[in-house]
Image (cartoon, rainbow, N blue to C red; front, side, top):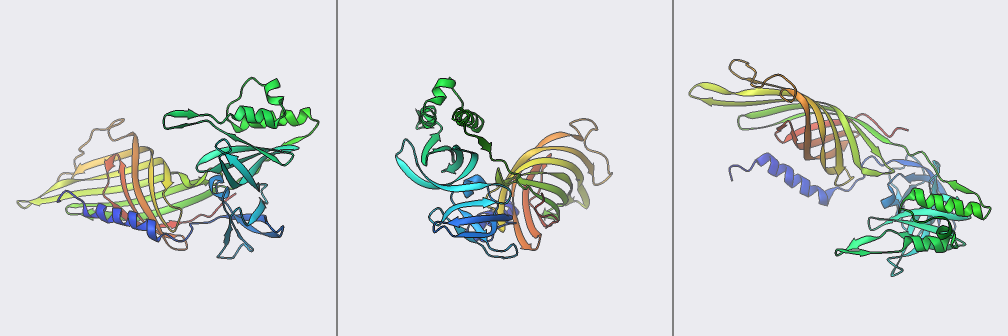
Length: 363
């Protein structure tokens, strides 16, 4: 079909191709820590920073900071692990879905005491685990399954875990970490025991990225320059980032007919604020994004350089939405290839460019 754009077809094929050939982790961050194997052997080294959904099932470890390779261990191999920043994970065997399924997970200690509270993730669901006298009580939130509410009675299990203390002192609570900590803390106090909320400072991952490039097809061309700041919080996700910065685009359309050149050229200065979701966190990273921008747009004709839009708010400058998809490919030590299809004030051409990542993980 003539209306099908070749450059977008190429980008789509690369986007799909990346799912099969992305094989190296992007910018893996490590922190000092200790793992304890199921044979009670302790090893000091460096543990890969990751979000709870990943650390609940697997921990990756290397002996020295400069090692390129690392090993990943599951719940059958590791008993517990701790980081220098204060994170503690213990392997726990728990029963979920009203005891119908038994699983082994790494659970994050969030309240330490005679009775402790842990948090973990399994199958994209968050679970809290009360541990008292080496017995585990799993608090699971109610869910809707096939338009029916499936209840897991987390309040009743919390009451059993606290020997009736919950029902005697609370009418009801929400399925929140804050409420569970409150109940367990007061229960420990009633028994003459102390409680300690486990806190730690998570290092953010921050990147300053400069990209230059362009795109074109018959009678159309576009040049762009992006200077963006990217921020990840590994405690939340290593795949979702907040991006903001300064972008510049120069687009030109030309058409020759009867010895006359018609067309226009436009320039866009944009201050975007967008959320980016990586589909993969590998050396080849397809992604989608959406957000808002503050922008200034100038459009003039090619013949007389006359402005084609009026001045004023929401005419040549204002606030708008943006969205699109793209792909980044690591080449060598911070150098990346990038392609992006973007809507921001106008529908850009599919653009290709070269990026450089200036930053590393910062405290």
